[in-house]
Image 1 (cartoon, one colour):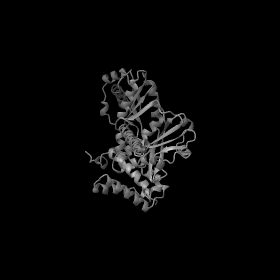
Image 2 (spheres, helix red, strand yellow; image 1 turned 60 degrees about the vertical axis):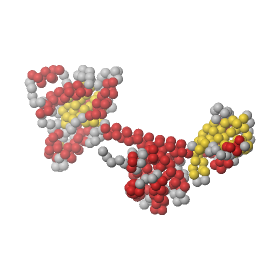
Image 3 (cartoon, chains in turn brown, green; image 1 turned 135 degrees about the vertical axis):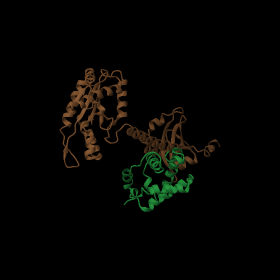
Image 4 (spheres, chains in turn green, cyan; image 1 turned 90 degrees about the horizontal axis):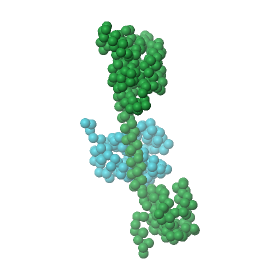
Length: 309
Length: 120
């Protein structure tokens, strides 16, 4: 009578002999969905659940049942059943099956949806921190990287450099904006290739770029950027007018801590050095110093932003 | 503000997952197309259907056309099988009381992927 009650429940229940696995009791649903409780269903468990272990099953007790999920067919419907095997008494095993199909559907669907959202978030983040024309980091990314780096108090070295392409306006005016864009991409590619992993490279304005070196001081970064300039300025670039042109840049450098602790301070001082580079003939790399500022105050020349670029 | 997508209109993921569940059962129950879906594990099938239906309803994520084509190539899906899946899709949308005009929009969206899915 009590066992008959089980036939009315959604649960699938069977009891078998622990040693011979011969059936003692099975509900109608158990028989229909999993089969007659016997050696056959243990073979089914082994076949469908690769890590199924008969030894572990024989060691179960009521407090720690042996559980796993099993995919079976109920007519044409595919079902996911959670099987729990425990001791019914000393010589008998109790097998309980619970239909977890809907739960699994939700779990898999949620997992899939979470992965879409994660991917979407990653791609939005990438867009937010990437310069769309050149594909390198943008101004926002440079500020983020600098803040992350300097938040670690152990990171006490570093220097930044502002690079500004010489006479860039002429590229646009003479050959059109498409060529201007091409020149920016070309420049980015060549500079990226000339830098090492110690450098973080970003486009921070129209034709203005910033390099943040994590470990170099201003003299070391100056040496690196000068060597980059020597390489870049010798490349031939084919113009749409079937002529050949070349690209060069002017640069200003400021050292972390020595010339400022925030990126705004460093950019401002590197900009002052860049001013000298532009004002004194371009195509050169100059490091910031207090003497440099003094020199500018003594013999004012054109404001950097007024120099034709 | 951009117009609300059908995905948002019908309740986002809260509606999407039971819709996926129904769609999953229905394709496995179909005499015509069940053989295509039968060998695919529940995990994988639900994953793909969630991504595909979310994208088709204007929700998050993009379904990569090249991937879609590659994933279906081996099944050599014909016109009859394609029509059957579209019929199932419309039935499921009707079950969820999606408005007729919106079903037309969704069916049209799905039809734009037809050339990627059926064997050409």
